Image (tube, rainbow, N blue to C red; front, side, top):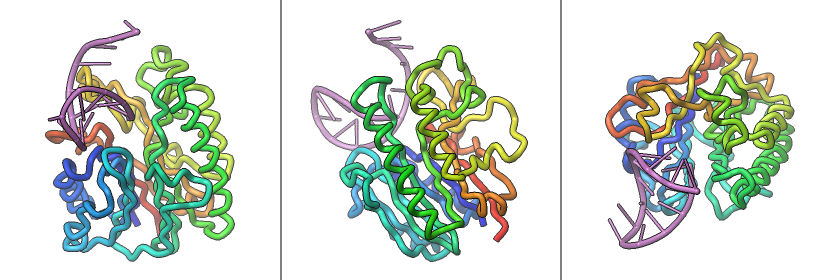
Length: 255
DNA sequence: ATGGTAGTGTAACTA
């Protein structure tokens, strides 16, 4: 069972990339963020015709999340209690005995801004939600764009980024509070090359120079982490023409 | 304190 996450930055623009990537990689589940379409405009037929099930929760211009799956999706919830229903940043579903929580965590804009405070509140609400979900679903995965680089090794220039949004102490503390719900950042359960990132700014040729951050994560409950056999970042689609600024992250499970 | 780019949607915002 291969489960992936990818911030595609517009599903309309990236649809060819997504279809090619799914076809090449034979993934079972792909969680998408920043689809940027209302539900009525989601290209559902394209996925169903390719043999996938989909569920999605979107809005115009901003945010938007979706789950694409080879296997049926059940117990879908895109409006969990205590999460702001006006910003479409979360969709939850079950697949093959695994509970998926697909998240697009607020960016936070700038440390100390209103959006930054909103991000911290959103993460607190997510932590509560996870603790409730864990009571019913021991095999749980929270994955998506967290907009947080958890440690200095997840940042190309930790000194330059110190205290900035995406790496600030409060955000990292909020991330650790998530992990304290007995979740495991499975990427770190395996040997990884230094300088492995999941996002590179479109500007200043950041991808070519590998000026990136690791802000997209796959966090597993302990029973599910025990079944995880690999976790990798696939940089390939970031090198394609007109790419998303994020690369997909993939975890493989023995099920 | 801002630039550099991209997406949405045509000015200015978000990232």
